[in-house]
Image (tube, rainbow, N blue to C red; front, side, top):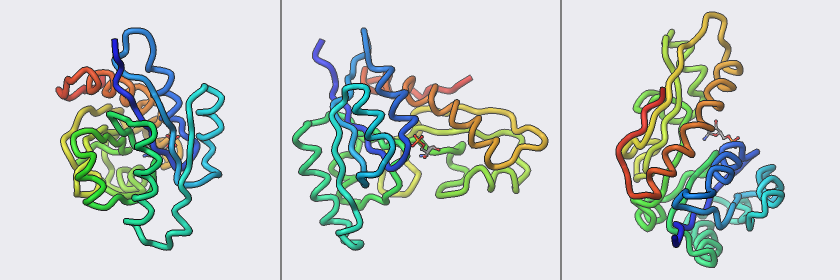
Length: 198
Ligand code: GRF
């Protein structure tokens, strides 16, 4: 089988990246070919290297807000690995419509809310403040609008009395670690029907 080549973009610890990499084995139609961060300090880079995955980073700071120049550098690095699919996994940079257009239909993101609720940041705090009884995470195709795009999977849980943003985000993160690999396996096989867990 010639596997789909997957590059995973991270900014931090990369716990979702680790689960994605671990999932791509056996009859899985994809393999991780690169983990790319926007900082040399991203903790996930060391974890990726420990799993034998090629890594690289493009520090966004020297570009001082010139998103196009930063993304041009990202593309230089990406094309060396020639990925078929990009997975954003805790990648905290806003991408320009031009970059997104290049990868549209081949770029996924995981967002810690039940989209379309709570696009943007502080999703767990916002769900608690709204008194939501349910919360969760969404994997979606990346389109020009932030945290939007066709939903490829959602995982939901019951909010518990006494939940704080920290306790809620920790439980949602565990769901993310189940959802993202499940969605990627289907997506890499060409199946875009949404995965809904549980
Ligand atoms: C997760 O909460 C994810 O939903 C959001 O950023 C965080 C990344 O965590 N996109 P990690 O770097 O994958 O551990």
